[in-house]
Image (cartoon, rainbow, N blue to C red):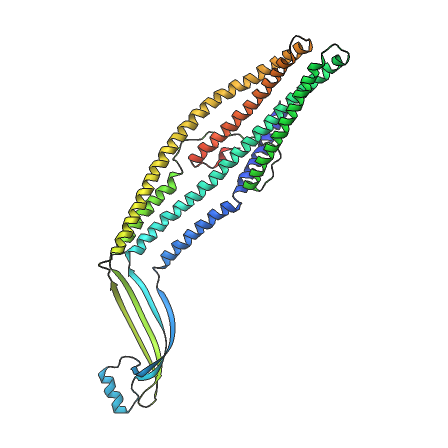
Length: 421
């Protein structure tokens, strides 16, 4: 008994390791990595908006030639009189060279703060969307593995049926050889054996198709069934609504930002340069510094194009709100259907398991009756088919159950790594 329990624990551990390995592999495929890149892209946009609040500093250099002497920098009358008295060079020249810097920094641009809040909600929406995509792939994996398990079980059921018929075939073959049993029965069994081999071959093809899909999703080769044990899923918020709600919040600040474009913009600017030139009156070398600092207000008091942008943003907000309602209705209907189906499948599994036991006993009796020539070959084969169908039906119900649980976990945003062991 202890050995049996220990063996079962080892098998469950191995199965858990296999399914966990597949889940982990999904996180490394290009599609999942692309979602992470999209998150980084939004974060870069977020940084760009944040950095727009920082001062901008730029250096410049210029060389200019004028058709007539031009002031190198503004010269007050008192300075002009002083230069005249000293016979100095006036601050005018035809060729002027400058080096300097400009500094600008927003003091009040309301739309920047609106866009900063908007991008925060967009980032959350993209992060939620990335998680939804990952959960969707996990759910798809569970469905593929469940279907693969079903095909392996179906193949196993057909192999058992094939072995059973083959045993019967071998048992009556001697009777045919001595003329005690009609050859028709042997031929009918042989035909059934061939048909089963064709079905098994067809299942092998379908198994390869599913193995290929699992490999595309995980880059891992699967060559055996993987048992899945699902935990109970607690009711929660519909996860697909989260990115939509964040987008709705973002649309509010998008409208606000477009409206706030009409508010005054206050900017601090500092300019400074050093100019080099030769005075036009005596060729004296001039090297003059000039700087300014000021606060500038820019106010677009009439710009109808911005009104259309506000209207477009409001339309997007309405579309998002309607999408939330539509998704809520769809998910509510889906979860109700899943819960009802799971209840029915649990009942069906109990009945299907009992049906297998009954059909196994019926087949034993049918084999005896057939060998005693009290049952036709077709009636006997029907008992074989009934048992194989019962086993296949049980495996199919398990696959459907796992798929429904995966869908339910996906809808509630549960990590399937914690749901399936």
